[in-house]
Amino acid sequence: MTVTARGLTQASAVAAVIAGVLFIGVQLGHPHFDAQSIQTTEVKVRDTLKVVMCVLSLAGIAGLYLSQVRRNGVLGLIGWLVLSLGYLLMVGMTFAAAFVLPTIAASDPEYVDDAIAVVTGESPVGDVGAFATVIQLQGAAYLAGGLLLGIALLRARVLARWASALLAVGGVVTVALSVMPDAFYRLLAFPNGIAMIGLGVSLWLSQRETSREPATADDLAPVR
Image 1 (cartoon, helix red, strand yellow):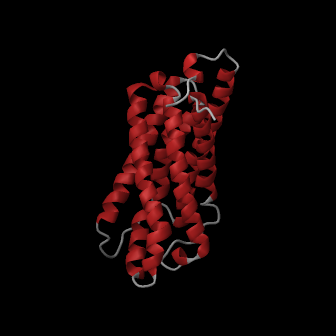
Image 2: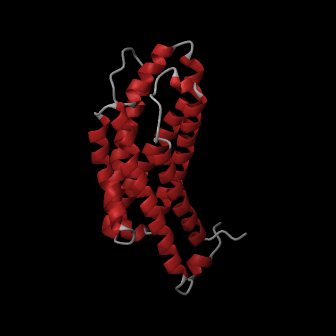
Image 3: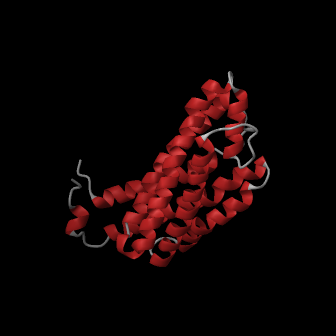
C-alpha cells in the first residue's frame, strides 16, 4: 500500500469527524459524575471512548492545519500547537478518569470526588495536588488553541467558514457553560464537536475536489 499526502489528509478528515461524533455522543445521557458512578461499567466505557476521541482529535486537527500550511500561516501554527497541547493533556486526564480514578474510588472516594470537582469547574474540599494545575493548563490551551486555529482557518477561506467560526467561538461558549449546573456542563462538547464534524467533512470534500484536478508530484509521492 502506498501512503500519500492526500491519503493521510483524507484519513485525518475521517478522524476529525469520528472525534466530533464521539465528543458529542459520550455526553448524551451521561450519568452524574462522582466516586460511585466512576466505578460503573457505563462510565468506564464512556471515559475510554473519550481517550479515543482525544487521540482522533489530535490526528484531525493536524490534518486541518497541514492541509493548508501556507494559508493558515503563523497564527494557524500557534493555534495548532496550543490546541494539540490541550488535547495531549486531555488524553492524560481522560486516561486517569478511565483507568486510574476507578481503582482508588473505593478506598479514597473523597479524593476522587475532589478530582471530579476540579474537572467540572467546582471547588474541591481537599487538596488534589498537581491535578488542579494540569486541568487549568489543559483548559487554557484547549480554549486558546481552538480560538487561534479557528481564526486561522476562517482567514484561510478553504474549509467551511461556519465550522471554522464555531471552532473559534466554541471557547467562549465553553466558558459560559462551565459555570452552570452539571446538566448544562454536558453541553460543553457540542460546539467543538459540531465544529470538528463540519471541518472534517469540509476537509474530505476539499480533497475530493483536488483529486479531480491533475495530480501533482507532491500528491502522489510516497510518504517516507
